[in-house]
Image (cartoon, rainbow over all chains, first blue to last red; front, side):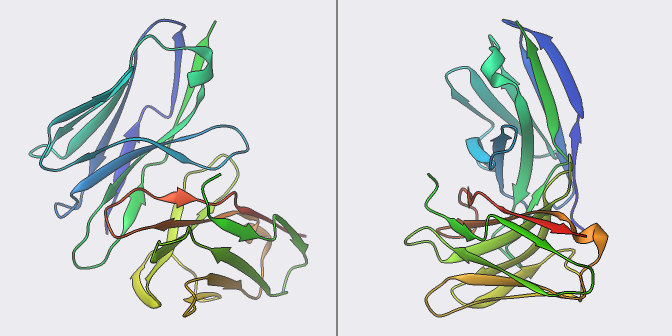
Amino acid sequence: GENVEQHPSTLSVQEGDSAVIKCTYSDSASNYFPWYKQELGKRPQLIIDIRSNVGEKKDQRIAVTLNKTAKHFSLHITETQPEDSAVYFCAASRNTGGFKTIFGAGTRLFVKA
Amino acid sequence: DSGVTQTPKHLITATGQRVTLRCSPRSGDLSVYWYQQSLDQGLQFLIQYYNGEERAKGNILERFSAQQFPDLHSELNLSSLELGDSALYFCASSVEANSPLHFGNGTRLTVT
């Protein structure tokens, strides 16, 4: 079945450093790749997304890249701040043959002040 | 506030019982998704509805069922509950497929 692998499961960085989270998807029909941030005890919230016709997208300190050939996509956070500490989920979605959004297992990011 | 309402917030029940979780999607959203999140785990996709029809199914147990009503609200029914069903159940909605999901605050189910 469809699967999204996410690495690393835990990431600890110093404030001001960059953080990179990588995901790989298996369903070649996936064409929409959102990223969600879940703070402790709260609901997941969308932080950035990318569609399959785009290779890169940036929003301030957050960027996402997509390599369709390799079925890889990555989240890049620059100049990390303590408030970036949370669990980050990648997801892969398609709109044909069954509209599933499958999530990766999550990455717990710790930003040390 | 995401605009997605889930009730109840907390539910404590015993093994073998049946419960119903309710979700009202964001105004204008036709798709409703249900996810299960166990302690410190990821988001397991259960099922998705679009405008009243089931569109996709994930790892949903036979003891679980769901439906979306004409007013677009959705219910997730969990029966013959087991200790392992204890989790946070999220409902999310979206305008259409391949658009951002808006999550509710979840229902925390504890089975004792």
